[in-house]
Length: 173
Image 1 (cartoon, rainbow, N blue to C red):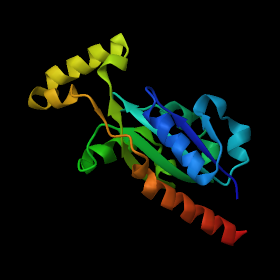
Image 2 (image 1 turned 90 degrees about the vertical axis):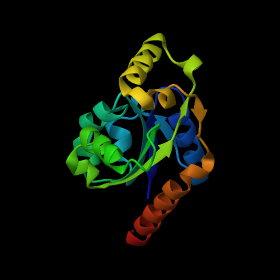
Image 3 (image 1 turned 30 degrees about the horizontal axis):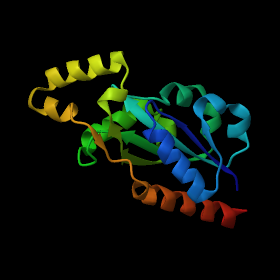
Image 4 (image 1 turned 180 degrees about the vertical axis):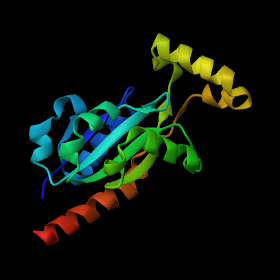
């Protein structure tokens, strides 16, 4: 039973969760840029982490590129975002728009809270955030508020799912 943790993020929160998961599960952690057909083919299952940027998963293109190879694998997907987990319709929409249906059916999906450090954003991202906040009206102020809710304990359900997959794959072999 072999697994790998693969991630792509923008400002470090997704990487942090991936590294914590790798330490807890004693698994290798790679970026999507470091992971291709050979690594995917050698795995029984994958944990894939992504952040969301303007409604798009950072791993979307990677998932599409490797869809065939991933189709036979067990997958845990964790999505790091600023959207409240109580907004289930919005979160489900993100999944449907970013993950091919065949893969989504094979995924156990988890949403994890992220962080927003305005000073760390690129000029373009600051501009886009300000524009989005203006368009959001009353909710715009919340979009501009800095926060950091990246905490290791948020990974607990993700790690439990990974241990469950590992257990089932071990029993299967």
